[in-house]
Image (cartoon, rainbow, N blue to C red):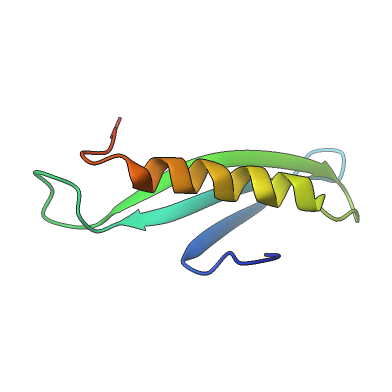
Length: 77
């Protein structure tokens, strides 16, 4: 992962026709009514094979994570 993505988890999956898929996740330790931390999927992205994800995509993912962390209680679906 690029930039300041500490605390993030990136799940990578290769799809059909040599296409890459990414899920960007956070661990939510303070979820109300939960005994264990939740793995929260914040965003998903895709990209063609052997290309790099644009920095703008990482910025957008970090922005969504900041917005998620700002709310408390946080929306959990």
